[in-house]
Length: 152
Image 1 (tube, rainbow, N blue to C red):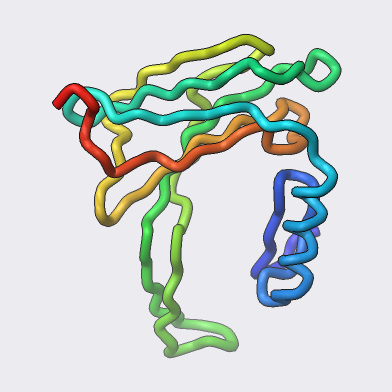
Image 2: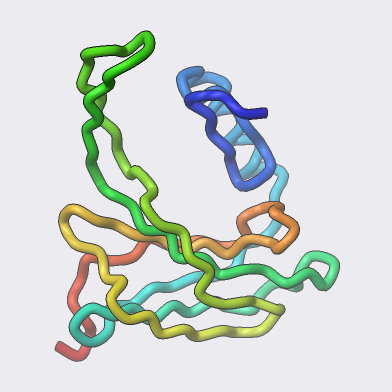
């Protein structure tokens, strides 16, 4: 299915994003049905880097590998609509994804990945997602911190 606004929750459930009750139910269903999660941590390093660590604390589902993804987004964004039912309106958006990049693989054991130039700032945020290569559930996730490196 494809419609706007569409929400996909944990790679398994979907809902029309403007239907608050349906979205909340899909989130509850995802929490109740999905098993243990991987531990994902993101620590600032150097001038603009991040170190991503994924714990191999759970068994890979059916031996399936998972991708480790860097998702970068704008914290706030406005769009001037020029056509359609919202013509001439200024629509605000939050956490608008601008870039998704696979930064590594998880195959059941601990993984550490260093990324340069990815540190979030006041305008841009990022998150790390670990998702089954079969486009199934999110196995672990973490937000990137705005903090300074521990050694500074």
